[in-house]
Image (tube, rainbow, N blue to C red):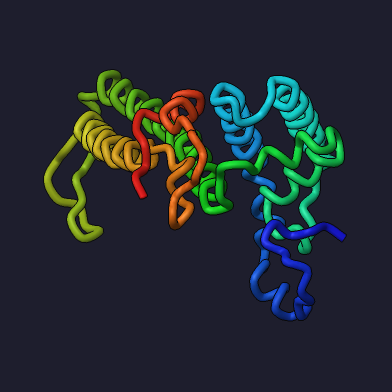
Length: 225
């Protein structure tokens, strides 16, 4: 049976496990890519700071790439006992490379990992939505340009009102979509802060380089505890 990251060897009632885990072990499969990226960046930073050896970092990177390959082939599963993506990835890593894999957790809390994964996931999906919204806005503007003179009745409370045009209708929706892009970019900026090293309640007694980790992950700012 897999060992939970926080497990201290005490028995846990099955109903408590079911209540606390819920569907996390299923939903967290969506975060495997992000968890591997965050781990690769963290391992690189640990090596550069002399906290782990170059050999350990290379072993960790090799193992993480294999874990990611297993995920992309649909072979990676997270058990209810593992609870989440972090335990599953670190467990597979230790199976693949041994002791170096167990050193990956050095200097980061589980809270760090959760927030890094979710923010990386959100940033990527937000940019996908922004791309789609901009494509829609461009299509609406082209529609307005090509059919600007086509007469279309305006509607008020489901009833025909003032005469209008396809151009006015399409242009109005293009503006609405553009406003939504501003809101999406605001959400992206809110996610664009690296939490690695900030989520342990009382700090980390290691010479971590948080800015280096943030740069490796493409964050523009640091999250402050």
